[in-house]
Length: 205
Image 1 (tube, rainbow, N blue to C red):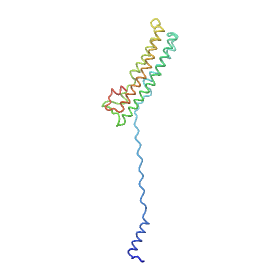
Image 2: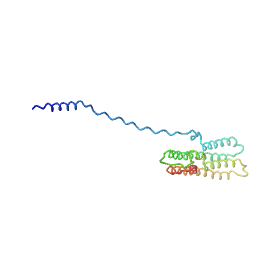
Image 3: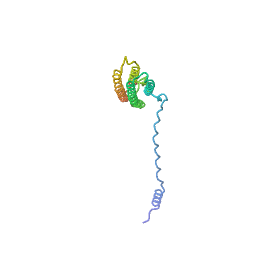
Image 4: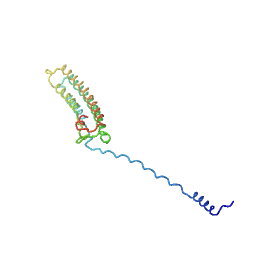
């Protein structure tokens, strides 16, 4: 059976077109999302030493000075009590301060996220954080008082009375600093999702 010339020409054209048609172009690669920009950190927000660290070092220097003069002004039991108090002060001061600053860093990170904590007008984190808390200062002052009492004549404060007062100072420091650190850390976690955080709030963290 012979095909009509026109139909034969159309069939040949379709076959040629289907054979010579190039494949569709490949889709363009989707660019990867850009990494978020790093948050700039000011030099003043990262002190080389914190105030509690300085107070701990001053405590160490005080013990060194008392070691040099203890033979003339202190009895051996009194010096041992002061040394014991210094060990408790340093051991409670630095870890509690670290916990407080960890909570502050979590809060500051939440402030940088616009969907989390929001500061009130005039508030500035971390500039409004206290460099040293009242509890930390009181703990160091308790140590200073005990050093002064150790230098007073035994006629006023004998070894037995000094030991009793020193035991109270040890318990005060051991309970005061960790409890305050836990309270301030809890406040920092709570204020991470708060709005209108004022300067007074920041000073309490």
